Image (tube, rainbow, N blue to C red; front, side, top):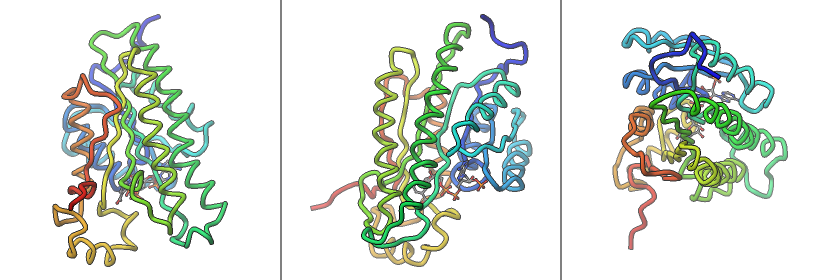
Length: 265
Ligand code: NAP
C-alpha cells in the first residue's frame, strides 16, 4: 500500500461545520499554521465559499469545500472520499458541527423531535465519523512518515453545566465528552491523540438570539474573564493542538470559557 500520488505535503484538516462561526475560525487558524483544509457545511454554500476565500486571501494552502450532513452516516463516506480525492490524506478531524435545541423549553415539555435531531448531529454523527476517520488514519500510519494525526471534539460547558430548558443539547455534549475519553483510550496505541475543547459563551449565530441575556450575565460576573468568547479563541486552541504542542496528552479537556468552570467559595 502507498499514499495516493496527489497526497498533500502539508497536514490536512477536515473541520465539520466550518462555513460559519467557530468552525470557520478553526479552519482559518489551521490554515495559518500551514494545514490544508476541507470545509464542510450542510446548507450554507455561500458561507462555505466565504470561508474558502478568506483562507485563500491570506495563505497559500489548498482549501476545498464539501456539502455533507453530519447527521447522515452515508454522507460521511462522501465527505471522507472528497477529502481523499482532494488531498490524499487526513491528519486532523475536528468534530465541530453542532446545533442548539429547536427551542428552549422546560424539560417536562421537551420534544422527541428536537432530542433526536440534536443527538444525531451533535453526538451520533461525530461518533461514527470519528470511527471512519480513525480507520483511515490507522491505514495512513503504516505508509506515511512523521504522521501525527489527532481528533479534536468541540463540546461545550454544557457537558457539565445543566440547563433544564435545553436538556437535549446538554446530554449531547456530555456524550461527546465521554466519546473523547473512549476514542482517546482506543486510539492511543495507534498513535492518534484525541482532545476535547470545551468552549463557553462564544459570539456566533448560535448565540445571537440570547445575546442580551448573556450580555447581562457576563456583566454580572458569569465568567472571571469578563467578555464574550470569540470564535478565534477556540480556533487558536485547536491550532495549538494541531501544531503538535501536546504530544504526551490525550483525552485532555481544554477549557476555552473565560474561567467559567472555576468554582469559587
Ligand atoms: P453556528 O454559528 O450555528 O454554526 C454552525 C455550523 O455547523 C455551520 O457551519 C453549519 O453549517 C454547521 N452545521 C450545522 N448542522 C450541520 C450538519 N448536520 N452537518 C454539517 N454541518 C452542520 O454554531 P457555532 O456557535 O459556531 O458552534 C460550533 C460548535 O461549537 C457547535 O458544536 C456548538 O455546539 C459548539 N459550541 C458553541 C458555543 C457558542 O456559544 N456559540 C459554545 C460552546 C460550544 P451551515 O452554515 O451549512 O448551516
